[in-house]
Image (cartoon, rainbow, N blue to C red; front, side):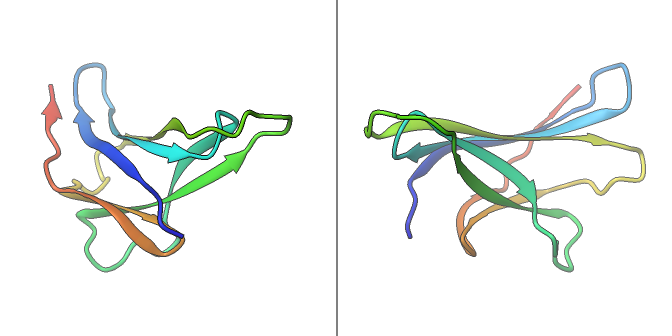
Length: 109
């Protein structure tokens, strides 16, 4: 199943107080307003510790929802301890397919 997504961004926030935190956000087209989008770390991150690999999950909330295409924002946040890897790229996967690649990750300090 192909999914439509856009506006993917990632950034590292190192502003005081420590520790810093890392964020990824993106917009996903979903079938109705009751679908929520979540990002989680992939179980197997691969050999390159500088590349963060995330899985996109779509969860249908219970209830009756109008069936119209909607936009759901997927978010991922992680506290970055001093020994955490410094991510230079982010890959987002849905059902095993890569749907987004981020290689520009600014640091906000």
